[in-house]
Each structure stands twice: as C-alpha cells, then as structure tokens.
Length: 312
Image 1 (cartoon, rainbow, N blue to C red):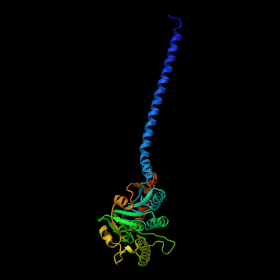
Image 2 (cartoon, rainbow, N blue to C red; image 1 turned 60 degrees about the horizontal axis):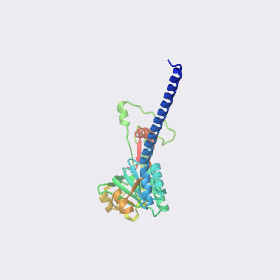
Image 3 (cartoon, one colour; image 1 turned 120 degrees about the horizontal axis):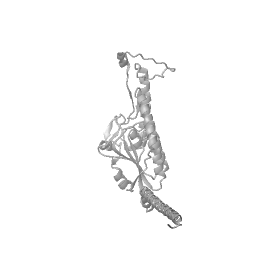
Image 4 (cartoon, rainbow, N blue to C red; image 1 turned 180 degrees about the vertical axis):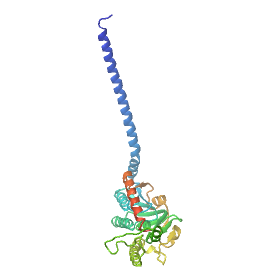
C-alpha cells in the first residue's frame, strides 16, 4: 500500500469540502438573487399604479380625487370626521387633483361629525375657489350625510337615490313597566337635579321631554342653516323641506335639494374633465379599526339603554 495514502485521502476530503462549500455558496447566491427578483417584482407591481399615475399626470392629464363616505357617520366608524377631513386635505395638496368627488352612501349619523366635515369643505372652497368639489350619491344621502353633501358645489344623484331627511332625532326605550312585572326595584342616586335626565328606568317627566325637545330644535336649526348656506337660492323651501322627509333623486332635483343626475364616472369625465379617478379615502390600520369597533360596540351597548341623538 502506498505510504502516502493518508495524505491523499485528506486532500480529497479537503477538496470535496471546498467544492461543497462553493456549491452551497452558489445555491445561496442563486436563491438570494431569486428572492431579490421576487421582491422587486412585488414592489414593481405595488408601485405601478403610482408610477402610471405620475406618468399620466406628467402628461398634463391630472386626475379626479374620490373620497368615499359610506355607512353611519360617527366617531369610531369608517366614516368619521377625522378620516374624511384627512382625505380631503390630502386630495387638495396633490397638485394633479383637478376636482374632488365625495362618493356618498349613508343614512346619516352624528351631527357633530357631519358639522366638522361641512365646515372643512366650506373652508377648502374659500381657500381654493377654483377647485370643484361635487357630491355624488348612490343609494342614500340622508340626514347627516346630506348635511355634508350640502357643502359641495353640486350634488349628483341617481333618479332612485333617497335624499333629504333634514331633521334630528333622539330615540330610546322605557323599561318602567317591565321592571314592575319582573319585580325589579330601581335604585338611583344622583348629585344634580337633572343628572338622571331621560333615564330609561324611571317614569318619563314632561319637563325633561320639553327640555330635550328644545335641544333637538336647536340642533335642527343648525342643520337647516347649513343646508341654506350650502344650497342657497337653488333650494325651494316649503313646509316639508325641513320636516325630516326623504325624496327620490328625481324629486330632489325639482325642489332644489340636488342638482342633476350623474355618477362618479360621468362627473369625473364630463364635469371635472379628468376621467382618471384616484381614491384618496384614508384607510385606518386594521388594528385601529378593530379597536375602534370594539370601543364603538361597547359604547353602543351602553347608549342603547338610554337615548341616541343622531341626524337620521
């Protein structure tokens, strides 16, 4: 046997190890390169709409900004003043925005949230009079939603859309007789003569009812003033205008509640002149949305025992 066989074996093993390391390194480089290409492709796909938008805007085409206001208008809901106002400001800041469409589809909600948005739209219009802001209603634009839409330059609807409901309500339940039947005794201690105002577990007081009626009337007048400011001479006022009634889009045009028939596409293309539509609706993070819904659900479960004060 060759006396140097040990050395030969060691050299072969060492060579094999080096070869294996090179092979492993090459495969590592290959997979890393493949992952880089994959991530680059994903990034390209994700950025393509923005890049295409930038290219289109660079050509002078511009775009119509769309902001969705759908569902109940209330803090903790997707349609809340903070999110809508952020969306509006983002759209205004974009120099390629040729006009704004408020796509509305809501039965109403909080008078406070609606008022915030109304005032923001009016402020934007005073600072940017050349920038058109139109409301486009689909199924329903009622109460608090109409409060917001009234601030727009014009309101476009479908003939079958429901619009109006210019009124304020506060609803609740009384459980006094139910408690008697169940043999439940109400124990209530307050500091303040009216702290238990409209308590659902106590007999209704006429004085409390009159007081809350006056509060509702005041909010109603604020709503009416906003609608008059927004609609101006276009609004044909009669006994039913501010009664809380709703009208179809076709009826609404006749009495000046809305302006004309149209949808997002026709308004963007024919009225604003920028067919390309870009969604500027601010989307909450999933965790914030879940937290908000949990908080809103808890608040709703508590308030359902009493009264709800809404523009609906």
